[in-house]
Length: 302
Image (cartoon, rainbow, N blue to C red):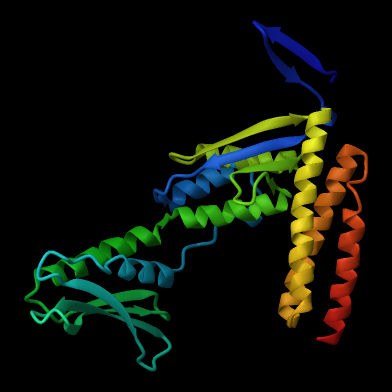
């Protein structure tokens, strides 16, 4: 397919071969709203994303902890009291027990009164069941909290939150060799070699409720090439500085393995862009090779 330029009232759009672009800019905005589990999995399947990126099933124990934690700090409508959630050790590893504690300021203002067991929430790991016992039955706020817990538990057991979705997106961006244009992220540069996976990710994000994703092709121009060299060089040099500093200190086997994985990822990214640009990006590849050799030597000593 040859490159074609279509001009309309001073605006130029370009359709071209993959070879005529370096990659894509990509950015997204994600809603904090919960998304039903079944809906998200259906959208994921429709996007074409590989199964390895599928968000794992929600663990009932995690839904239990989140539902109980949600109650904390809720009650402040009488005497300045508030709810606290506290874990209780029972010696039974099959159970997670959390107490609903009411903390109330006294008239002396320097002391606090506590009801240490206004209600008790129990999660059974073996049977994946929950149980609630209300001991302060005279307090309508405690009774209401117990009822609310049941609703929250069902909600969090069957809905994915934004954090779970962001973790999935980050795992895809990592495999896309996505390079942030600034350290805080926001906009990423993705090499053209990974376009298929990128398009699947954008398709998935765009299908989610109140979530937006955009991609913009980066054409192979002199300005774009300079930009890519600067961005990749900055990322690699920052990594090299961090790793050299880390290796001067005490590192264990696990930390060295993590450093090796990061170095491997950075090196692959450098090679990818060098192949696209058809030129070397300084001495970065050699610098990473030297660092990897140092880490392998260190790993033998650990």
